[in-house]
Image (tube, rainbow, N blue to C red; front, side, top):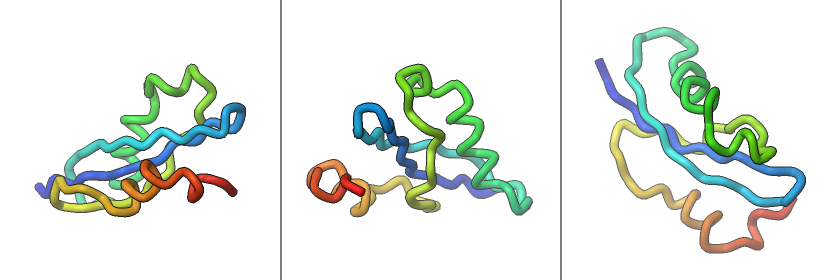
Length: 82
């Protein structure tokens, strides 16, 4: 089995804040593997009670590494505006 790492973003529309996170899981060969792995993490996410929306996948990788797109979001708030 192949282990993958998923980086994700959650947004709170009331505060305008983003939460950036990462989770991992194993591929089973089914079409919904990415959704299954992220949904399992998001179901009881600690930010859900704070008004954050469901997580959106940012990136998927077979390696645990630093994600440039997440770093730009975290360090350059001007990109966080819609």
